[in-house]
Length: 292
Image (cartoon, rainbow, N blue to C red):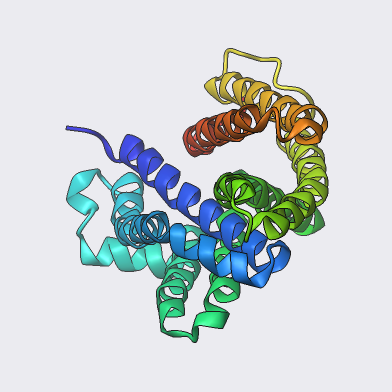
């Protein structure tokens, strides 16, 4: 039988990935895509959005029993009411879980809002979920002002990373609109805005990632005897590869859009795959000790 620790890693992957996707996609569409096109692409993302929301709700439900099993004596404590209540109300893990659960419920309720408000409300609720993640984990290792700085930096890192990752899905759909005469101008405007905002998001991801690494390790991950540092090194390599692809997309393929449309689509899909691998790595090494 799989232990509660590996199960928690799997849940973290689906929970974090869903929140990052919903935040980035909704933020990009609501802020940077012309109104007619934003509703069209939002509807086209409907199935993926429903899957992401289902992942959030399901993993939020099972996250508390998993935490109880890890803190307690294994699977027997996963449904022990006293242990569950203790974890929920007497630990920072429980505080984070309560915040995330509340935000997931708010996210579920966005479907009841008027059509014109749903995208923005989805972005806000998803951002709240991401902002609650640093309540626990390595960001909680420091106290005082340093702990506040660490958590704030983590929030910035998550929001910037989600803005990058989540926006890639509607960008991929926007690229297909370039071949349609009635949406071409709006699609070009949306892609230009993404390109501009993408520079900022990528820069923030890299800078906040460096700050986070310094706060946790005090320097580069050079001690590969620790799994955390090995996995962090792989993550850095994947983010570097994503950055290179993003640069190629912007400065090589976009200026030659008519001739290199397929290359731009392939590059965007490659970024999505690499980002998914990054989320999986973070879900894993976020549960490990950084160093001795």
